[in-house]
Length: 189
Image: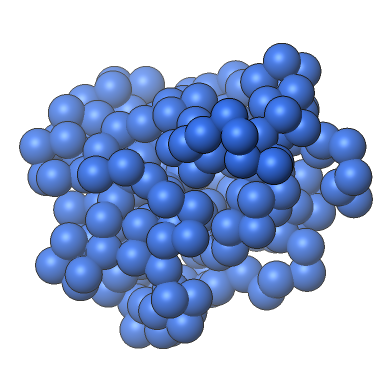
């Protein structure tokens, strides 16, 4: 199934001050999450930011790209098991969840494995996911696939959300997010 921007909801997981410093990752992890949020903002795809209780505040770039949308505070590891999160997801009218954030082997795995049973398709941007231990991240990806979710890349998302070069937003978006990729492209705060 192709991702479609009118059906997609970006779900960003636990990009919080208390966990980011202990993840086995590099700068590209945060950058890739911000890139995804920036693309979603540009194409008017809603973004829902999850904030796990007790892990501190969201990091500044994520707060900035959330554009004033209140984070959804959760205590469950699967977001589709949290009634408040499911309510917020369903309120968007979207059924394709684009998952990113941390930790891959916990929240991303559990949410992606349960998504179908709740009526959602799950897509995981692997390059925007991380765990405290690299092995946990790596071993999570086959399990996510086996569970029926789809592992995707940044460009898969972009070119499925804009499937035709005649789309009026294609040229500007491809310059901002492919040719000169930056999570805060032109004309965004």
